[in-house]
View: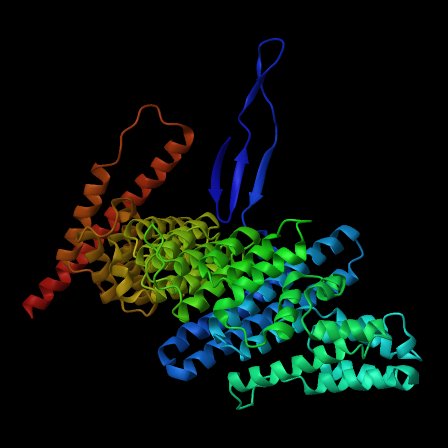
Length: 634
């Protein structure tokens, strides 16, 4: 198998051969495959994710200098929430597209993408709680409850179904709804549902009221509460004892549903596991278990509860999924394992690059350098930016990611920017501006040369000349100047006069460009009837050897109208110089064997021109001698 890398994709070609019966070698596969490295950049919806998060990323890098103390943590949490809101917005849009999809295959594809985005937001939210918020015991559980409520949202649709019916307490899913509300710690809503049951069934009213009171009095550390953890633990222990007393007194024995709810509030693991279907995943089971058995759990103890909850929930029936392993690594506070598992499981580098960058700003990754010289943050940002450069427009975002990689970013940007296909001049100007802003002189020259070559092929000589000047490429400027002069000889006029008239100091880039500018100046002087200045410039172009010898005949022909003027323009000395140039040119004309008809015709024209010039020069010399002699005599 041989392969070659392109920007963001790998070109594969099959080279293995199989022997046939005739002992001939034939290719076993006649196809060439292109395998895209990062297909997600081509998704319209995910492009919004990349665009929106780019602004958040750049803002965070610029914010770094201002971050300090308590405000630093608050700002980093705000940035994390911004990233999550972008993920959720994309997830909701993808969900709508999946619903509207007419093709079942594309519908499944979009639904799969929704699941991936949901998992990304789930992981990011947990990392935010554990690593960025660094919530202590007490508030930690409140954050985890919010986390579960946000990601296990089937309860809302279930609630709408039950409450939308004529008799909610008679609905088949009524007790499922009450149970889920209790499992998620939404006890106020559960009490409201129990009041409906009490109204509909007088026999259960007393039991519902007792259980409702237990729910109301459950001690919870609210965000604005000033009580200490010790006070909370004492109150919670008293409340728990009261729940146990009611259970032992068989207060709820007449109603299995209420008895089950009371057991859940006591954190009874067997009863909780009976509700596996309603919880749907082990981390919901974990948070419910903590809520009703250890509400003041410390961050350092989380991994013990997480591992036992995972084992109990799966019960040996199935092995953990990649998502389970990632969440478990987070509960174990193993940041590097989280990033490693996410890199393997997710289909693009967006998630790990941005999460790692944020965690690096939280100063959690400083100690972790990779063996090949870069740190983890930079490595992942480089990979993500490389993927963006595979896209025809997202590459512009990749530039900023390379900019914020201090070690290898500059080198990587130089390598990638040379591979961008310059399809249009507008795109080329964008690339050029990026290179010029970063003083990437080699790349600026390379791009200008490419554009100059394209312009020459399209016979846009003015554009080619301006690009070669911008590239400071003397050889190419000479080539284009020659084309300008050749076109002038064929057509008798210059194209792109504005450019040639405004060359300024740029005409010093090459001798040929200097000649082009000066020759155009000669025509301008002639047009303004400044014949003396025009004659002096014409002569200096020939005698200074700036003019190419192939162009001498054209210059001498341009001198003819000046030689034929009524007043003498060329002095005797200047006329001698012109005569010397003419004879030098005539004596060096190449001699060839048997010329063809066209060659004979061209030679006749050249001979006629030479004779006309000799005659005009001789007449002008006579007039100049007489004029100069009479001036001396007077």
